[in-house]
Image 1 (tube, one colour):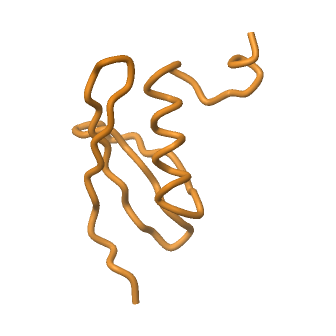
Image 2: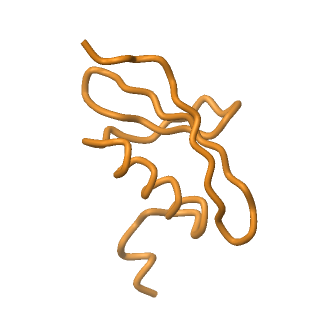
Length: 69
């Protein structure tokens, strides 16, 4: 059985430190900003969730159509 307690991950985007929580649930890994009730996911791995959080933190979206512009 996997550990389902949230993990905190810190990374730097545009010279700002960002901290997100990763939470393993039945359908996969979800990420959320601290003190924000909205979570994003599911993702198959922690790495995918972290990459999505970095993209969202830098551009404010993860939409490929908007990022191409």
